[in-house]
Amino acid sequence: MARFICTALPSVEKVRMCNSGTEACMSAIRLARGFTGRDKIIKFDGCYHGHADSLLVKAGSGALTFGNPDSAGVPAAFTQHTIVLPFNESEAVRAALAANPKQIAGIIVEPVPGNAGLYLPKPGYLEFLREITAADGALLIFDEVMTGFRLALGGAQERFGLKPDLSCFGKIIGGGLPVGAFGGRAEIMDCLAPCGPVYQAGTLSGNPLAMAAGLAALEELSAGNVYARLEEAGAALEAGMKEAARSARIPVRFNRLGSMFCGYFTDQPVHNLADAMRSDRARFAKYFHAMLEEGIYLAPSQFEAGFLSLAHTAGDIEKTVQAARKAMEGI
Image 1 (cartoon, rainbow, N blue to C red):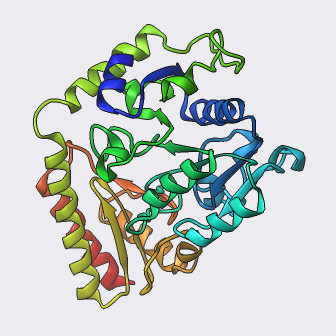
Image 2: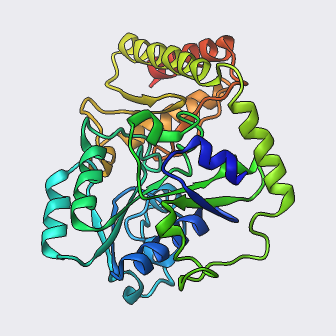
């Protein structure tokens, strides 16, 4: 498994297994702090990196869906070193680094945020994060729990041609079993115990059952034209859903990359959480129930991304589009 991950992602020279995406992100941040000797972390609002205390600040996913981006039980002192910025806003990053000179251990980001629906990085934005962290001595951490092995075999970093310092993975590398992993440059990973002073451990980390299941899944993904087929399916769904919205004369922004997608009921572009929050969520609720009546079960939240798989046929996509057309006309 370690050899497979390191081969698929050139940025990962060494990798450490754990038990969940939450553990992977939590450990990557601890490692960034230990490696740099700095305390502060930058994250982006709407991005969800698991339920570790220091990361439950303006998070996405379920916390956002239930109208409570933070969580009870997390002392304010635990989040005092977490700086939250709007995604896709370069000047906010520059200002935060300038206001905290040589204090930022790293920037953690979903390269394609999928926990407030789905919005894409603006052209050059991820490249900007790569450049500014390198110049500051901070680490760039890609949370690829969603995008890893989904947008490409090498994840979002392959699609955008970037090499973060650390990467976090989960979900798919367990083939459905509980698993996580984080990895990156060898000099950073060597700070982990037992070689270095940054502690990380877990009784079930790298257990044989999860590793075997995950490796089988990854080997399936590396065979044939899996990602070309997913791209084709995603493009068909996107075209169909946009046409359904036009036909129903309803303003919809349909964001997609590869097999990930989300539609927002708004006539404005959605680039970050603030944009997503301005969408018509009451209309989404009606749309969700209308789709359910047509036999299409979407995630019951505006703030969840949708995913296509190889199990979805052209007929499934056409059925979904037809259902969406009927649902939109009905609302």
